Length: 372
Image (cartoon, rainbow, N blue to C red):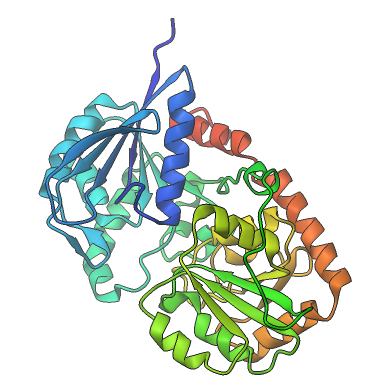
């Protein structure tokens, strides 16, 4: 009887922490846990200062290392190094979700012998000073890795580091279970003040790299539309002040069900991100699964690969409120174009992002069975 493949998933945090990468790690954990030929464990840190603990969730043992708190978006955990060394000896393959400098260092210091796979979600973008000290560690970590998984070609070409290691890279997109968005009936949650107004949706954290201020500014020019903003964040008060007198509604943080209803209820979705911290934009997939056209920005990352200009929506330059306004108005004025792009969007999700196929590809990379 063939022994099970032992996989260790490593990330900063794990749900209930809210985040795109955390959701992806949870998806992998659930998938690997249900395979009869696989055993999976997860190593993460406590989000807040506190002691470590072990939880059994999603069919796996999830080890939360004690933490001294989070600094520069990274948890500080001396316990993490000991746990990584211990669990890497158990594992056949370790998948480390980056950017996570603590894990890079732990991997190198542990001298682990198992297969090491990097799930590359983004370069370090904002902490430029720290990057100068971290860069040598990151390059050593990339040399040590057996393989790198990137979600789009833009993750490689737009990175300062991955082009040098292109031969190790495997392009595997993020999965999306389309039926979670199409098989449930939802009550409308986007209620415009004007009858017949085109409903424009943004969903995400209200932070610097999302570019929501440019989208609000665009609505000084747009006619016949109302903007619905779902999410909270540091810039919320500032953005509400900017939006005074404009057809903009702040809905706060919605439940999972209400957020799905918002995607189903909108007429078009906008992701106006302005910095490379936005490396993919899973919310684009969610809108596309509901058959909605997407307006995104031409960042040198994976963002414009998810929704393609002229096929599933429109792509505009980042930090350009005028271009956003013109794109929104173009789609608002043409129901036929919205329908065409939305139909193409749903088909792309069905064809390109099916979870079973994508998860098998990830498993193959971790097992060392991937095609070259």
